[in-house]
Length: 139
Image 1 (cartoon, helix red, strand yellow):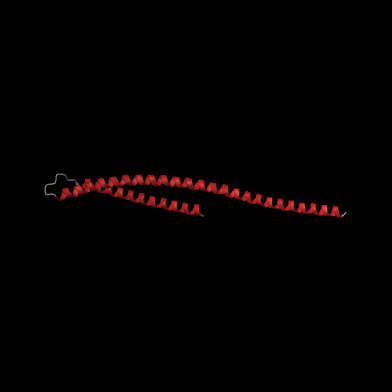
Image 2 (image 1 turned 120 degrees about the vertical axis):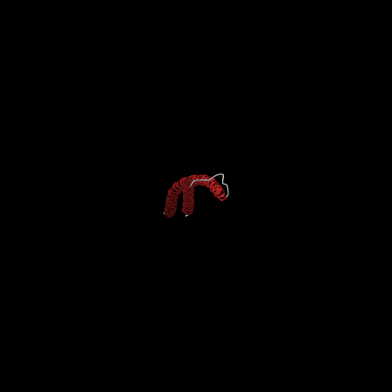
């Protein structure tokens, strides 16, 4: 009888150990499942951030190209305006623009300045978006 009692006690201890192992395995399985869900969500978020960053980089490159083109045009127009000013100051000017032509050039210069200003604003907005995306990716 004591042998049977001892075997029963050992069997109960093994059952308790197995229940503990099962509970631990279930808990770890739940934790692993949560971790995998979080990992999938983070991968998705990373993909979205990378896409947004690529779009921002492309827009920034386009804005830089526009800005370079505008600077080139502005320099050309500045040279024309300087030439016109020099011509007007000379005693016998070799190149004189009529008032309409001068107004047209000044108007074109003003338009180019506005476009350059808009490009600067666009670049600033894109840089702000990139900074926001970096902050979101960190948190």
